[in-house]
Image 1 (cartoon, rainbow, N blue to C red):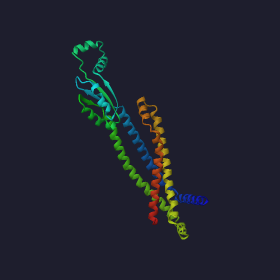
Image 2: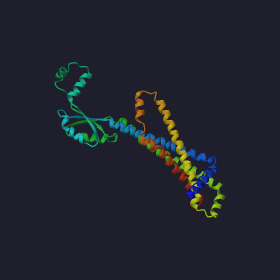
Image 3: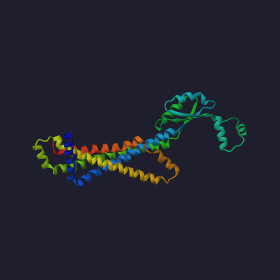
Image 4: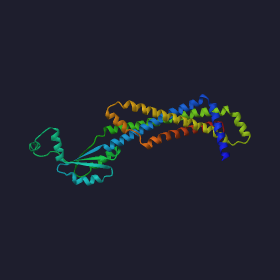
Length: 300
C-alpha cells in the first residue's frame, strides 16, 4: 500500500510539474477542448430536445380515419385497436359529429336542419393516436387499407420540418465536431510535445537509471487527460449558464412558449449523462493528443 501511494505521489508531482512547464500552451489546449465540448454538448442537448419534441407531438398527434357512407366505426374498431403502433383511439359517430357541427353553426333546430338535408350527410370517424411521430405515415397507410375506410388525414407538415431540422442539425454538428476534434488533438499534441522537449534532459536521466517507457510516458498522458477533464468541466458549466439564461428569458414569454420550454426539459438520465459524456470525450481527446505527441518524440 505504501509503495502504491509513493508511486501515485510521484506521478501526480510529475504531472503537475509538466503542467507548470506548459505555461500558456496549457490554456490553448484547454480552451480548444472547451470550445469543442461546448458546441458538442449544446448540439447533443438540442438533438435530445428535438427528439423529445418529435415524440411528444407524435404521441399527441391524431390520425383522422373517415369511413365510407353507411359503415359503422364499431365494426373496424377491433382491427384498429390491435395495430401495434396505436396507443389510443376514439370513435366519433356521424350523429355526434352532426350535433357538434350544428352547435358550431349555432343552429337551434337540429331536427329541422336534418330534415332539410334529407339525412345526416356525415360519416363515422375514428381518431387514432400514434405511438410516435416517425410511424405516423406508415400507420396512416395501414389504416387506409382497412375495409370500409374512405379517407385518412393527418397534419404532418410541422413534424416534417422538425424532423428535417433534427437531421440537418445532426449533420452540421457531426461536421463541426470532427473538425474541432482534430484541431483540439493537434493543439494538445503540440502542447505535450513542448513539455516533453522542455524535460528532455530529465527523461534521458530517467532512461539511464532504468525507468521504463511506460513509467516515463504516464505523466504526459495524465497531463493530456487533465486538459480534457478541465475542458469538459468548463464546457458543462458554460452549457448550464446558457441554459439558465435562456430559461430566464423565456420565463416572460407567452404560455405556449413556456409550455414548449417545459416540455423540452431533459430527463434525469440525460441530465446526469451529459456531464459524463463531456468529461469522457474530453479525457479521450486529451489522451489521444498525448499519445500522438509521445509517438512523435519516442517509440512507444
